Length: 157
Image 1 (spheres, one colour):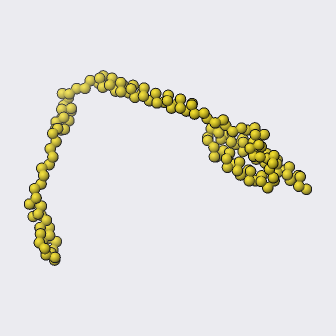
Image 2: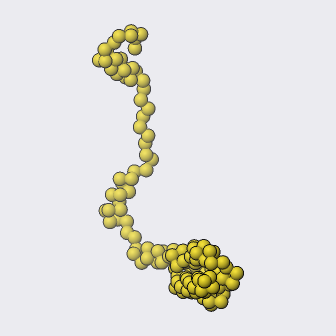
């Protein structure tokens, strides 16, 4: 290619073609294995695979995997059983009243108590297997707080 600064596109392409013709192109890699011949051989029917042998090997491999899977499953079960699940929260009204702290609560604090109890115990915020228990706890807590508000309202007059 020349050093001219104003050249047309056609002359630039000509120079590139001439330059590429001068360079030697590496030969394409050869594949030492004739895949087409193997495919032809398989489809010709000269190679036969015994179905029973394949089935036996498949079942043997499956049995080994099944044993491994069963042992992993057993290990997971023992780990789950070993992890002590905490006891579900109590639904005893006296216990809930003690959790709320109703004995020493002031009337102005009751609304705050209700919100904080709901934040920790609302059925939508607990695990699915504890939702029924949480619903009962919330009902009891609301009932206890409403009773405390009524008692506090009676004492004020």
